[in-house]
Amino acid sequence: MIRTALVASVIGYAAFLQQVQWVLCFPSLLIILPQGRGRRPRMTTKTCSIAETVWKTLPSFRMLNSQVRTASPVLLAKALAAFPQVNELVALIPYSDQRLRPQRTKLYVLLSVLLCLLISGLVVFFLFPHSVLVDDDGIKVVQVWFDKKNSVVILAITATLRIRNSNFYSVTVPSLTSQVQYMNTVVGTQQITNVSSIQPLSDKLVNFTVKAELGGPFSYVYFFCTFPKVKVHNIVIFMRTSVKLSYIGHVTQSALETYHYVDCSTNSTAAQDPLPPLSPLI
Figure 1 (cartoon, rainbow, N blue to C red):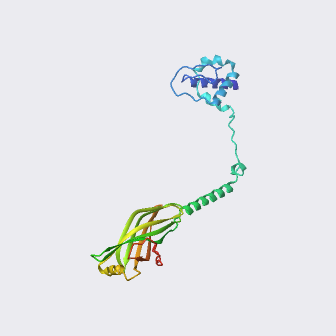
Figure 2: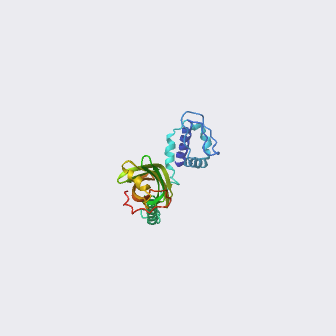
Figure 3: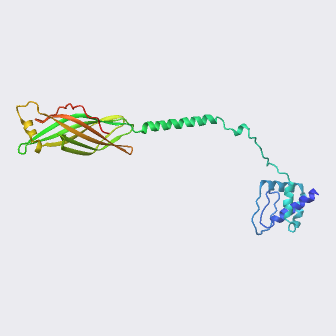
């Protein structure tokens, strides 16, 4: 009965392949079926193995070619179901198997967290804005002109600021504004743009010149500065300087207020010792 079933199965399989032009898997079969309509069947390793087994088992298969065209393809499915399912084993791994547990997971997670914390700390340390100090470095040069006709004293005051950069990146000084006052009256103003750039962890001296005119209600200053019997011709001026700082998209402004002694009788190139400065306004 098994032999008869196999013969019927092969006949059914050949009848199924009759719909297309196809050659069986193994050259030993060499059965070319006529061309027909339909989709080409998928020849898997399992199908080819079954066909070869049937061919070796039934030598009289060559004589069955005349019965192929009248067989039913349904018999093929029944025959294939009778063969054992080989090479299709399924392995079940228990949940407690050691292979399902990654090795040193806690160590890797701990190292990753420590590395992230270290990188974050370094980024905060290097990029967090530190203070930029602006200090007065005194008046370096004072040039004096006298307008005898109008009794006016003209002063060109060159002052110096020391800017200290404590950051790990450069700081630019977009603008600087300075104002000179005498007796609470503004007598001179100067504004400078694109002043300078301070390198990381360094300081730089920034010079600027302010022109002040003492006349009108202060015409007595002209007589004081030109009076020959007076040996000391120092006057006290008040300077308010505002510096704009820019770094990593952050803009701040630092203000500095100082008092200075200025000799108004003649030109001076020596540094004048300033009076103790007021507390800077940030």
